[in-house]
Amino acid sequence: MTFDSELKKRLIVAAAQVVIENAEELTALDRAIGDGDHGLNMKRGFEAVLADVDVLAGKPLPDMCTSIGTHLVMTIGGASGPLYGTLFLALGKHLPPAPDLSGAARAFSAAVTAVKTRGRSDVGEKTMIDVLHPVAGILEAAAVGGAGEDLTARLRKAADGGLEATRPLRATKGRASFLGERSVGHLDPGARSSQLLVHAACGVLSGLMAEAGGQGA
Image (cartoon, rainbow, N blue to C red; front, side, top):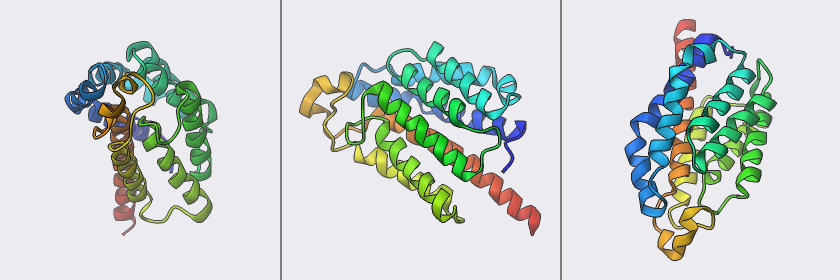
């Protein structure tokens, strides 16, 4: 798969739009167990990314990710800015310009590890890691065993399962941790925004593969 300017633009637009369109839901989720600003902050960050989409899509893939990370750090604020910024900055550091599946899997795993380190968090602590970690696991397994036709479906399923797994957890990180047992029964807003981004990327990539299949028929 060639990450040309058109594909990069489609990925950026899909990611930004899904965050912007779901900002109210993210705010409601955060209001239940946090300070209620996750949706607004994420919307502001991805609006800034979307406003610069043509410039970003014209950059080499690693530089594009680095620039997105910088945009997010500068505009999102709160805890999410450094965490999502770290995710994209680390992707920019570890992605080759034209990654194959193995290269993409290694870079994504490295980026998730960087977020874990930055947030001092791991799986099972009711954070975005509960979505990102299993998605990284699917990519790593696919890099070894082959992508298969259903890779994007498996990535979506991993993201969905990771999000739902946050519902029964007691939060131990961030403002939600102050609620103790009262955080149980709520989805984590950061996990939801991560799940939305995974779905957005998978939607673009699966659509591209469908187009390629149709052209080859």
